[in-house]
Length: 425
Image (cartoon, rainbow, N blue to C red; front, side):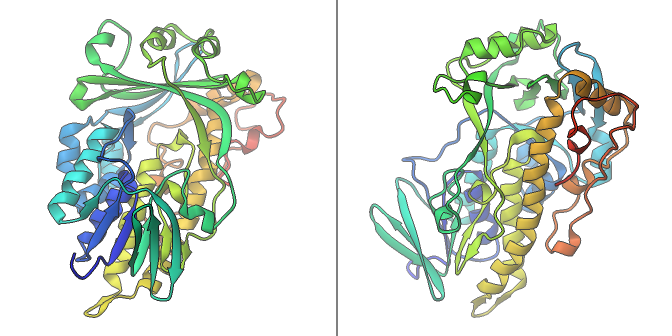
């Protein structure tokens, strides 16, 4: 890039690569700076809902993603204590409704797809760059790193939960939910004799815990996630989330859940964090994107999805505001900020509420189960606002779902907040 890039993207994860690809497809010169010595992604499975597979299709990547992942037949919610089915979402019917499929894929496979697309599109991919700060100036922004400084008309910070750039917008810190996640993506033959589904995404919801299972890589692998509230984390202790806490949290669950626990990666675990929503992601020509802007709890499976939506929305606004002399960056960034801050706030706060719903105990659990069992299988009220077309303007945002009255199934409760658990915030 002898003339220098039009855009500097900091961070080579899914969000950073998506931004680099989307803007390059609009004819811009993009340089991406990644801290690691080489590109790669760790982790296990991801769920990609129709609002994002629609975007992947527009980038010409959906066929590759489908070849690497699995199209499950349904999302199924079960009670973790007795294993009974509470509700399900038929994903073939959902595909017909939203015009795009639901896919589960290994995180590294999605990352690899985006990386290959960026290389093919001509993105300048630079590794081994540790960014230490940012500066804004008239008509551009600067990235400071251990090797010097680089300036471009626009800088996008896709630098994750512990974003350096976010410090320019807020002095907030990540918020711990006191919940801990164990993961494990294993060869499918290890669960061949177990009572698991190789065609569905199944979540078992229980008292202060839940357990997720689904196939990966065309059924060659099986993904599991175990999440529980850590008593030691609640007490502020450093030895939180250890395997003995994992086993204790799921001791009262059904046979299907307990059978999967020994197959988890038991030598590593993750504390679950999000952040408070921000009202502003843009300062001059510096903008936050992905988890730097809106890290959610995972209950709606929208973290990676929102990052790719950010990229698509910004690129569409850039494309709509381009001229021979270049994009109207200020207008494009303002349009991006006004729609994405509102949408992602809804996702972040609703994800927290969904976590409360999943983890109810006692009479509240009975109320939740009764409500879910009463749901019609073709009722899309709770996902229309997520799975429909990604909004480019605030007036395109669909309405949120209506809360369910606490007395809708006539069960008693001791928790005053129960009626609010599924209320959009």
